[in-house]
Image 1 (cartoon, helix red, strand yellow):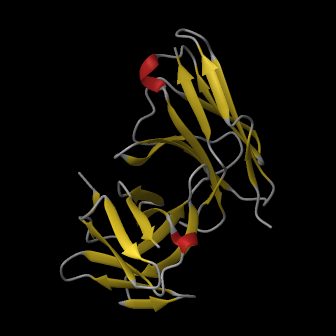
Image 2: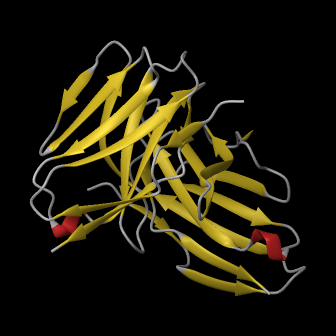
Image 3: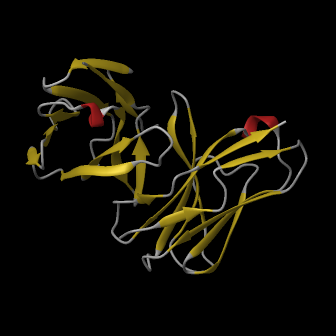
Length: 111
Length: 110
């Protein structure tokens, strides 16, 4: 069964802190994605990766960076968290061009 | 820019009735469209997809209709059940990415 896991379901951080969100998939998928989800805005793509050590900017990369050192793991980094980064963060992976499998999400609150 | 929009943010349906969730899209060059279901506290789950060379595709209790002339996509759920309560997202494929709509919340009335 397809499995995408995220390191935390809920996270509370303070403004200025460095935040790491981890995502692991066990399906040997090439592609991995990070989204943020805010009410009324749907899912917005932050970064994605087609292969190990490769990354591409999505629609809203500002304030974020990513790391993909291993095929199964894709990390999202907030270098200096700000209150406007309070959101639900969703990780996904895919083998095919478009069908993506999602993790349960991390609800991040920045105080 | 590209956008995918939904006609209604909330849809209330009587249990047992059919549900129709609508979606408008703007990028006529997309060749792929997909519907996801997101239950409370979970990530989105794939429901059904359709390529642009088709106008209808059926799954188990769900049907997706694609009208390229008016750039409209719909998801039909037959005999709606309480477990169908969720937010439904349409998305269109473009440049190997998905462009997402804002979502429609489906509420089932007993």
